[in-house]
Every structure is written in C-alpha cells, then in structure tokens.
Image (cartoon, rainbow, N blue to C red):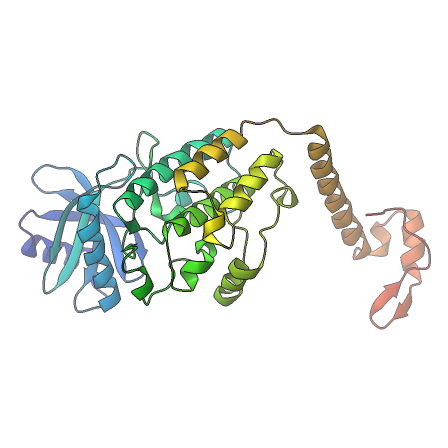
Length: 337
C-alpha cells in the first residue's frame, strides 16, 4: 500500500492544480479520503482517492459522484470542487467539513435533544428533497454520510451509489448500508421514499441511541421486511406519542404508506417533538426502567458469593437444592421484578 507521501507526489505530478495531502480523514470501501491543501491558494479541501488499477466498482462510484454532484447546488449538499481520472488515480476534490461526520460527533448510544434532531432532520430532508427534484435517489443516507460544517450545518455527502428513478430497477448493487436500508431498496427497487425510510432510521437512532434493527446483514434485511421497530419507550426514551406514530409511518414497509415526500416527514416530526408528553407515558417508561434495574440487581445478587448477601438470602443460597446446574430456591426472595 502506498504511503501518503507517495500518493502526494503522484497527485502533484498528475493534476494541473496540485494538492498536498496532509493526513487521512477516513475511508469508504476502496476509496481513501484525505485532508489536503491547495498548493497555490492554501485552501483546505477533502480529496477522495481511488488508486488505478483498483476496484472497478469503487472507480465507477467515484465517477458517478463526480457526474451527479456538479448538478446539485444546495447549502446542505457537499460541494464538489474538482475531479480527475488518470491512469494512476481517480480522485474527487470536495469542500472540507471541519467538524467531520455526524457519526464522529455522535457515536452509537448517544441520545440527542429534540431541537438538535429537528434541526438536522430538516436540513438533511431539504437536501434530499432537492436531490429528488432532479430525479436522483441517494440510497445511502446514514450518519457517516452526513458532514458537519464549521457553522453547525449538516451536509449530505457520498453520492457514489446514487441513481435515478429511471435506472432504479436496473441496478445490481441493491443496498448501501444494511441498518439504514429500506426493504424495497434491498429488493433492488429503490425510490425516493427509500431515502425517507433511511432518514427515519437515522432519526430513530438519534432519539434512542441505536438503530432499530441489529444482527448480521441477512438478519437485518429480514427485519426491515418483516419486523416492526421497537418502540422508543422500550429503548428508554420518553417521547410524545405522536413522535412514535410519525417514525412508524416513515418506516412503513410499503413505501406508498409513508409520507408523501421527505419534507413532509421532516415537518411532521418537528411538530411531533414539540407536543407535550403525557404523565402516564412518562410513568410507564420510568416503571420499565425501574423494573430493569431491579432485575439486574436480582441477577447480580443471585450470582454473588453467599457471604456478600443479606442474612435472609445467605440462608437461601448456603444450602441450595439443585436441579441440573441451577439452584432451586425454596424460599421466596425479598426482591421482585
């Protein structure tokens, strides 16, 4: 594998407007992304590089991105600055997002405040609606492909597998990233509503801390087709009832049952998050959390040494009657779930 210094020399030799590579920013499949500086202007940019000869699919995706992005001028879509396709390298020069991706900003497990979620969903939805107006489907909406500019604005990036509605039924690479893939997209039939489904999953993750479905890729795809997403309340996030309803509709298995467009979903979700939370709902979630805590304590006590237990429980565990490998407790424990 070439070093950054070697790649810098090749790029400077092959490109009419030379860029000096500074450091790696990340990678996506066979493409590497670097922070670079334009030699003449000193401007920081991000360069996505694919070595040639290399992965034909990666080169095709980079060329596809270079073909689509110049046509899209929107404040929430990353801007392409240059592209070159040589015998040694294919590379795409883009604006540099100083604050990285939203995945880097908010790791798995992070629950975001309602206003923050509303702001990001509105911005990404506006970018997707604009993209759809040109007949394109992004097909890979996820936090890793959402950049964060210095002013805190979200920007949609990575149009490598984007396609048009006309060619949607002819594609062979059926889905982008399994946890965010709409069921019809996994079947090879993406549509604009597929991006709405993916954005709804991103919103679900920002609300609960995790995507709704997990497992191996086949298991996740099956869940997209057959399983209902767990309620946000079951994930420990107290939200107005209407938020659950909006997310469920945007994630409907049938794309015709989702919102008319992605902006309508965005507006509805923003409105829903401003609604009051019923006291009964808050108590129900609190009771669920308390039950889980009690269960964890009971389980922890059950596997603790007898000398660390209270006197009543020490008596129970000091002479257990066994059935197989499990202790049979003759006396009812003080703790209950």
